[in-house]
Length: 77
Image (tube, rainbow, N blue to C red; front, top):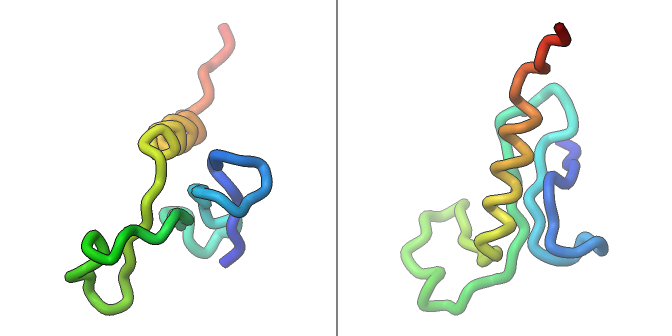
């Protein structure tokens, strides 16, 4: 799976970012890069899963962009 950035809080790619699959193998998967939370917030997470911290506005902007990209084009009259 190759990843393409959907939205990021910076341009360097080394900060919280939401990624989408950039190929036909997994159109519904998103990957979230964020900061490691304090240990007390990362407890009780099942094996194979993890929690990260991202700004609330990053998630909102990712949702707006993904929804806009999935809307059918408006027909010209």
